[in-house]
Image (cartoon, rainbow, N blue to C red):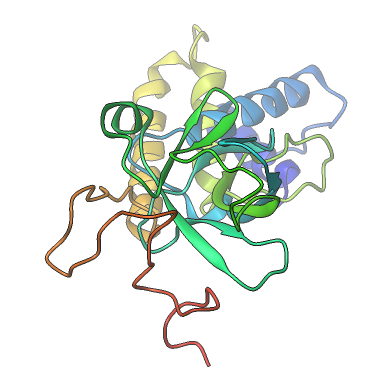
Length: 239
């Protein structure tokens, strides 16, 4: 579904008008701005790691205890099955690093962990030229900021675009004297669509166990052994 189609739906939902909205009109430009604002708000929905924003990103090489984040990243995916990886320069070895919150990192400084502070990914170890990871490539499971809508043909990646149409409609009537009475119903409809997206989404935030688990995995050494991946970094079960 394109952003133009979403805006046309919002025009129908909010204003009750089925006529085409001119893409050069002030109303269309306003709806487009609302769409971009609401998309930014959605990716920061508490307690959700959206599947549609997930990707694995190379951040370049590591020569100290930190590397700068790509400015397209808004969060690191928090899942013990999907760690941060450092691949040695000769690509023969990978070490796994578990992402933890800045508070956990500062309080405990467990080996094999990393965190985000500001625009940097910081590791619990400072790498020097004697370390096998020195000049290695850092790869992170990340959530990427969606690009703003600018063209009428831009695709809406949100799993249920009708959520965006309904929220644009709701925002458009918020300050309207004649339509404001629709606001509660529109927000209620949008919230129902949002809950449906959450139910279908697999990325609810995992709580990471920082202490040795009953399965025997522990943090230690330069990284940690990922029990869900084989020696080449592939998920177990992959041939």
